[in-house]
Amino acid sequence: MDDRKFIVSSSPHIRGPEDITRIMWAVVVALAPAVVWGIFVFRDARPAGTRWCHWMPLYPAFIAALAVATAVATEAAIQRLRGIRVTIRDGSAIVTGLLFAMIISPCVPWFVPIVGSFFAIAIGKHCFGGLGCNIWNPALIARAFVLSSYVFPLTSVWHYPADSITMRLGKETDAITRPTPLAAVKDPLKSLNKQAEAANKRALLEKVRADNRTPYRDLLFGNIGGCLGETSALLLLLGGVFLMLRGYVKWQIPIPYLATVALLGWALPVKVQGEWIAFAGDPVFHLLAGGLFLGAFFMATDMVTSPITKKGMIIFGIGCGLLTVIIRIYSGYPEGVCYSILLMNTAVPLIDRYTKPVKLGAPR
Amino acid sequence: MLGEFTKGLIRRNPIFVLMVGLCPALATSNSINNAFAMGMAATTVLLCSNVIISLIRKAIPRGVRLGCYIVVIASFVTMVELLMKAFFPPEVSEALGIFIPLIVVNCIIIYRAEDFASKNGLLASALDGLGMGIGFTGALMLVAVFREGLGSGTLFGLKWSMTYEPAAAMAQAPGAFLMLGLLLGLFKWLGMRKKVGEAG
Image (cartoon, rainbow over all chains, first blue to last red; front, side, top):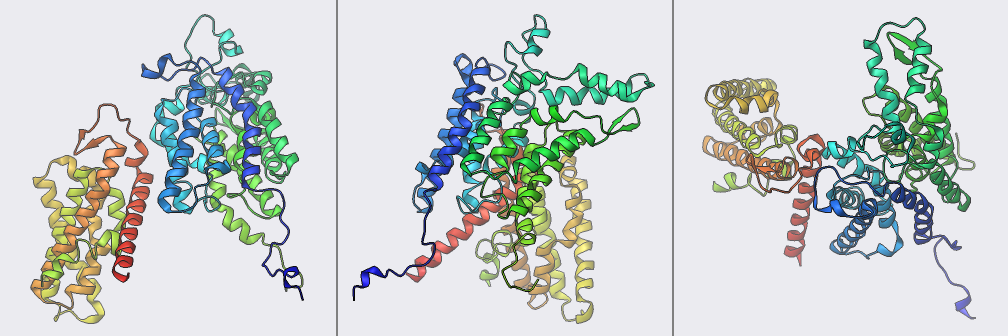
């Protein structure tokens, strides 16, 4: 009998064409339009203060390249140190570096992408055991680290595109440090309490919001200040839809996430001169502003740090949305996408435990 | 007898091997000066309480021994705290704040009292307390060198580089956990390598 026809092996027996390399390169392709557009829009961005890189053309491209190069170099160095196979060709380090570059201001000093990418790969990923073992999204944990390390360059220096509506209105100034759209709406609300008491507080709130609102068109096309890759909601949506069509991103995370943000962004009450006013938010603004699309499609959906089951994914998405809106409206930070996803990443093992499917025939 | 002194330095280092007394280690290792002051305060208390507890170990009834240890330790902590306020620069006791009184409940001191001083003679207990205290101080200062160097860009309060931009998170709570974790990992790895080397 010819034994070679009966090969004994353990499952899985049927392998799909998908592997890490294919998925990661698809993510790079999906991110590319937003990155390229971000580099183009922020082409005149420069780091604050005088530095040796001041003359550099296309400074954001330099930042992104540094972040990616550091991520790849760190991955290779650590894998060599750990004595495991060097897998920089699978693109996962490139995606981490790229995502990190997209969530920092284009005006950061040159060492921020280096420190951040190193932190993302070395601490965020390899300290937990490498690809597939990390608890938190490496790019986001790196952002949390650089955000608390270099507070001023990351939170106070933003670049406004030269032809954005905010700059056109701003007469002849060339001051380029202005609040991002989220901060522009949030900050005036704080000073409202000092003004004379208004009879119709809802109207006052709506007027303040309307006065400081960035037009939807600018939010869609990324003609605003913000992080390098987060500004163009349209291009990020395109990339997200591409990944969803390829099946790498399940709708169960981004759609509940976006829906929760829109709903709560509209419904949650804001305190104006001692009176709580609910159902007055602007859901479209909450959807388009900040890093929500980037977070919802590319960060929260990280296969390693999101729940396994579909039910778990929906819980995860709603949790992210809830935390994002709460941080945006009630906390000191203008944006909450980063911390909300990190917090929900922490809860993933718990979500997985409670949404574990019941085995067929097992007692409930 | 000398082994009682040297075991606390590296082989049974309270922070990196026994992993006791981590809360003050995390809180006061943000600068080398703080780490040194904290380490010295803890060493003094540890040495004195070990000596006294070893002397009265036969007089303490077993059922209330922990209470007795606490009374002894608390007396020395109070002395150390008042001495620090009297003879040290005010910044030191201000920076250490609540962590000096909290030495009373420091795991290292109670652990050494319970595990060693209550079973051993005067000299051995004194050497044990001194060794453990110096090991604790050394570990704290090692963590602090990295945290102060990276987080504030200084060493002993002096800038070590003109161009280095300090990563403030390293001087704050997250940096404490990160640095302690990384150093713990490093020492574990070194220990494992040594064991493998001995076996092979």
